[in-house]
Image (cartoon, rainbow, N blue to C red; front, top):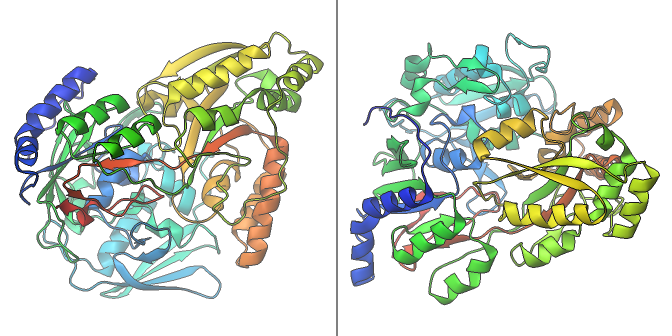
Length: 555
């Protein structure tokens, strides 16, 4: 284990150089003989560093990539698919009224610290989350709890909703019964979310007194969440080290894992923000895989013998209108004009990977609830200019935010996409003022409503339309800054309808309403690619970006 080191920004070359030093020995043996020993570290590069060792405290995909290797949830998705299957619970059932969920746990499951999994351990985790206070109640620090289970035992802000969670009981050693206040379509999917990875009782006891300090927008996460050796889950890997300076997390195989043993003894997750640098590191043999392959790199890598599987489409990219940050955007005609100004097909054709498509609404057409009848906004710059003139906004100036240091599954080249959209807006008379933030600052800025226009997106967590449209439009959301109580109420009513056919029809009507209101412009859905060296047996790739790296091994 190691002592916590201070977090320092790294230049790209420094990151690449450090990566080379760490991985050279294993890479050279791979290049020399075409194979690899099982004990050789598997090095995988992602687009960003993790934020915390406790997945409850975040909502970002890079942290979840790490945490799914270390922690397990009651339910999970089938390998490479979207069907809900057992996780720590072998069997589960829902009461007729949808408010009581009974989970039969696996027998003989051990935590990394030697604790045994039982129903009391499960309930201790849920009770901890429900009773959190202070900085833990910030939506930035408990996003998924509030999205799925509502508020807390004692809400400390009027902005926090009433709790949906009622209790967790342990009628016997391997049975956990979780009660919620009413039926909701967020379940059972909510039980599969990485934020709800189960920690050991000893971990919970050790971290019980640690607090989040600071204030909104400037929180400091607790020490345990930043230091290896402090948290224990049940997953196939344990946390050996988190080198903050090098943005690298080292995981070791857990030999007492209840399931199939991981194929690698050691796995290193390393952040390389630049997609070109990730490709070069793979080509040089310094890493053995990386995520979010640039579309232009897919064919060259494949031709060079690398494995580049493509995930199915399960995401959305959009341009958001923040109606409170810019008065002009509160005018529907202006929002419609900007929608007609953007050539989304050009983005799909020139920037996105093959299989990308223009989005007509705020979730992909692979989900039930997608509507064929939504209002569409075809590319028509002449109409856009005319509508801006009618609205008295011929000389409109807008700040337009985009992130500089990441690529996302739904946004493979943020700057390139921004350039296309900005040029289209400028062409119809809008003056665009670019505003850039690094990813760690970008999300708080957009969450707090500080960006009038911005690019963002979403990769689905589970297979239900509410996971997309309910995320944004089930209540007031500062990211968009508009209020429509009728829409919000209808969204919650749809989610609470246990009749599948009626609920899907309601989602379709809600998609129609959303695109009439036009709180933002859905741009595209795209299939992100992931790359592996020739000597790797890759894990099954997941449209939900939920790869289980314990499935991977050396050839």
